Length: 253
Image (tube, rainbow, N blue to C red; front, side, top):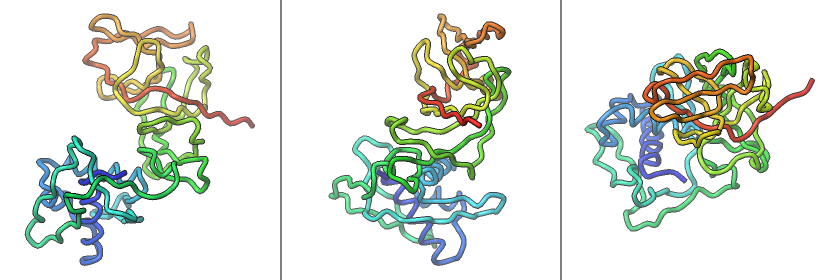
């Protein structure tokens, strides 16, 4: 399901590409949607890209490609910030086509995997393709590198509701939890997690690590699952959760 803003932006980009041959600038998209900042446009584009409607051509300016359009007009869900009425288009900019306000929310017709948030439908209905963000250290933390072009096929049965992504594990600090070097961790994106769950934690906006979460008052402990590694404790404001582990994939030679 697309929100109203996502549908409006997809229509704006498609109309601009048809009329000019190149995609609109972020400033133009921001003005056309009536948003206050470009960060909102970035979030909408990322959502459309993850759902398989858009593709970014990296290292090229103003290079967005519309892969497909929804079969039906899609209205925003009530209470969704994206569901407000569309503003008038910016001067000289194509007006976005939107559903009449009286329409009830519709869904994009397709198989179940196409409706999973944050994934692209794979060729088989029993699997989806998740973005593979890079290699995360389960020993010494390193920055997870996002590669927009890398995808990995994952069985639908391993996923629940919500947005997911994959990370390749490096290191041995989680071996007692059954997580080995070279495994692919399937992560459900979100900032919520309970004590004892294995999470992806961003430390000081620079380091990313896969550890077991323990909250202790105003502190957060990131515990390894290997006695050779030490628990690291940080003030809560220095740690931001990027999601929690929901599944593992492993290849055998």
